[in-house]
Amino acid sequence: MRHIVDTTLRVIIIVIFSVLVACVTWQVASRYLFGVPSTLTDEIARFLFMWLALIGGAYTLGLRRHLAIDLLTMNLKGRAKLISEAVILAAITVFAAVVMLWGGASLVTKTFASGQVTPALQMPMGWVYAAIPFSGLVMLYYCGVFALELARGEVKATSPAAVAGPLD
Image (cartoon, rainbow, N blue to C red; front, side, top):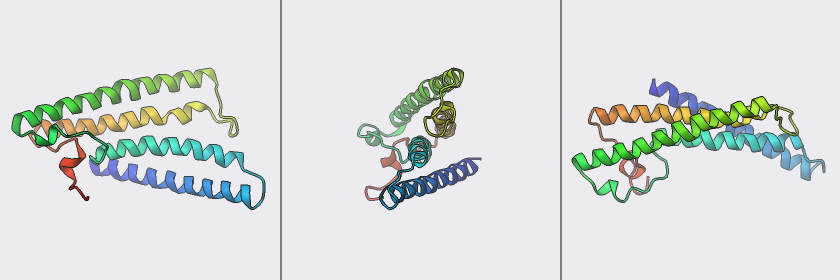
């Protein structure tokens, strides 16, 4: 299951990035070569960048390559390390559940209810904000995977330094 989620996210990120590059390239070409900036590609690029950052962040968490301050955790051993990793995982889980999933879903629901649309595309803003709860859901999935690993005693640190070498 984890391989399927990782591969799906990787494909989504590649597609979003490719479309983003095409939009920005067209935006530059239309502005400087044709003298008529494209408002549609500007708006699409902005929204895709938001989706890319949020989904990419969740995917990075799943790869254990996220930014972390692990000075304390990397010096711990045994049970103390396990407890530290569990506390860190609990904090990430609470953030993903409360802020991203619950708060993001609330924002999406209220935005759809208000009928707010994007200026150029006239697309419901709820679709733009949907990246927040989607990313929160992905983060919760990875937190569940990490929790199972911790429960089995497989201490694979949530901090990147424990997984990657200094030049990795």
